[in-house]
Image (cartoon, rainbow, N blue to C red; front, side):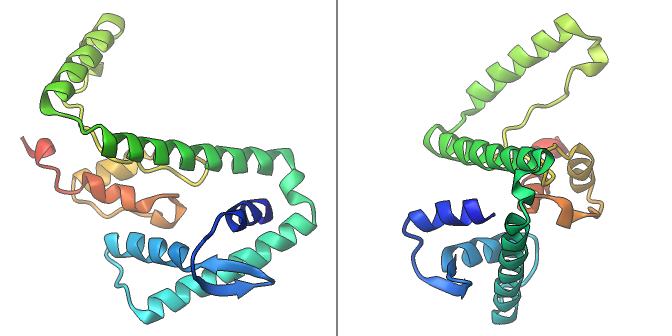
Length: 183
């Protein structure tokens, strides 16, 4: 975390929401978290933002203590940090790519047909997906694993437990009320 905080400090971060042990918590970070929370149905209020700042400050203090103890050098921890970094970068790349290269219905249909043919050639027909739908993000756990069961629950209108275990819970909302899934 300290290494990540130092990397973030190298780039201009804009105004700080708070400073913890000389390290700024960028207002942009608080805004992003508040926006994600609002997308999940939580109100964006001054109290919510104060709670976000308090949680980020606590997280920074605890992470700094973990670095002081050398826990960031633990191979398992380092592996998790790398996995999270890769996940964040991959999601950023996909969002950027999709923003700059919108997917047309014809492109989606051609890709669906290609995927279907590939699966049909290598597996039984029951493994062929009924639909392939492009979305901007796919929900993952904090360790980078996909969460198909949570997506299934959202698609079927069921509540999702353990949203707090997700690195990007806002991605679940991309699957709610999709017209393509109701056809």
